[in-house]
Amino acid sequence: MKDNKKTSKASVDEERYILKESNPAMKVFIYIFLAIWALINLFPIYFMFTFSLKSNEEIFGKNIVGLPKEWLWSNYSSAMNTGNMGLYFVNSIIVTVSAIAISMMAAMMATYVITRVKWRGSKLTNAFFMLGLTIPIQASIVPVYVVLSRLHWLNKYSTLIIPYSAFALSMAILICTGFMVEIPMDLDEAARIDGCGLWRTFFKIILPLMKPALSTIGVYSYLQCWNEFMFANVFISDSKHRTLPVGIKALSGAYTTDWGPIGAALVIATFPTLIVYVFLSKRIQESFIAGAVKG
Amino acid sequence: MANNSIDLSKQKKRRDFIQGVNIFLFLLPGLLLFVSILIAPIAVSVYRSTFDWNGFSEGTFIGLENYKELFTNGSIKFMVGLKNSLLIAFFSVFVQLPFSLGLALLLGRKYKGERFFLSVYFMPVLISTVVIGQLWLKIYNPDYGVLNMLLGALGFDNLKHVWVGEVKTALGAVIVPTIWQYIGYHMLLMYAGVKGVSADLREAAMLDGATNWQVDKYVVIPIIKPIIRVSVIFAVTGSLKTYDLVRSLTEGGPFQTTEVPSTLLENMLFLRNRYGMGSTISVMLIILCFAFALLITAAFKEKDN
Image 1 (cartoon, rainbow over the protein chains, first blue to last red):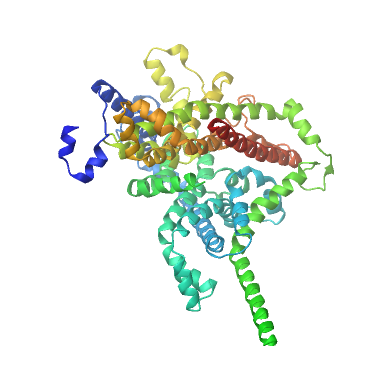
Image 2 (image 1 turned 30 degrees about the vertical axis):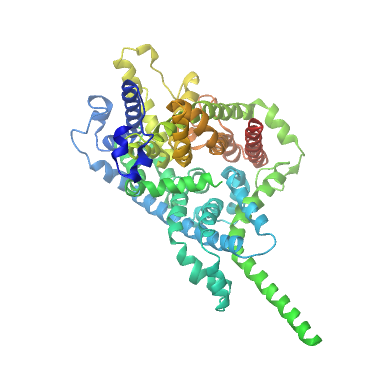
């Protein structure tokens, strides 16, 4: 504690209660524990990457958990060509990006009139949208499936885009609200005095100020859509419109004995997210916190 | 004068009307999505759950027969599915969440490398459950999987199993990855709460001679209780909705011992053409999710008093 007093004033507040672990053995024990848990969480990623580059002989005996002796990039070309992972990847991007764009726009418009315009029923409308946070995706699957199949609307991109947008909406509105109430109301006042209506105020003033919110909302919806499996599995039966999770499931059924290409497919589906995460980890974590804590 | 005020009130009415129309137009995209994909289908599900219906014909109204059958007809396996998902919920609440809380409290003490650990622990949350399922299938593989190899190397040959294929181990093989994957998620939420506890409060407690553990127990945990409540609700409703990992790992087998409500729901549609019964399972899921959410909220309120 005496040493701490010498440090600059700002950091005193930060550091004054740090690690007053009186017992050094305890400290070592805690670090070992933290490190082991970190390894357990990193292992699957390491494991998937290494076996995506191995031959069957290495995977099945000679070299299970080590680095690949021979880096077999051909596993990736089999995953891309025979396994169609390239197509599924593009499909996933189309579906995810469209769903994010639609839900985000719909959420911002709704949040704008819920939080910044005075009218009876705005609270009720908000509560109505918040129902979506508890409703399981399974709840609507039977009727939606029946309606879509009657309309011959299965096996299209929009078959997934529309439901994904709908299921991303509640969380998007919740996160949006947190950001939108922070914008000073004076801005709306000033705009109104200048003769701006709701639409001009929304598009010219509010939307540009919502830029920081976009990534927070986007991250959440991205993970929801990119990884969604149940709707994709039920609604899409032709291979042209499969998304990555369904594609992987199909691939693992086709390649039961050849693990390398499956590993490559797993890497293709996962690493884009992980690479973005390495650079934006704080943003991504904040988005999850915003989504839950305010709920 | 009189004319004028009538004009004014007319104008105001007109303005209000336009305002109303505009508000409606702003809400329209969201409402369309929300009502057509969530609210209306749920209403239809409730209605159709009272029918014996194959999805294409008109179907026959049978009242609450589906609900009765769901709980009494053993071949539907709903009780098995419900029991399994409740078991997952139990392990989530009593194993996963305490572990997450422990990590959050530890990291909240500002160890060196706190951010690194936090980021690594959160990683599994970002990975698709289908990918997690495939990875664990490889780990569980009876001949070449890491798990059996490890057991063999340590000399525990008698502990080797066909993990996802044996009745005794299959459910456990589903539960372990489920619990593991979301530890980081709950940890992150709780960590955010722990970080919100002011340094002054901790300091005050420490000056009173409290140890780290005591500060956590008597200062931090009571403050982050609302977050713990959210975590418990997410963990339980999430468990009820389990689907991806079961589909990836066991497909509900062996002998349907690892079915969960969502896989049964899918079976009703594609294997049995029983859309009425499928709707019934949907409705049961909604009821269970809301009931548990309310129950948990009430339980936390009770504790506060």
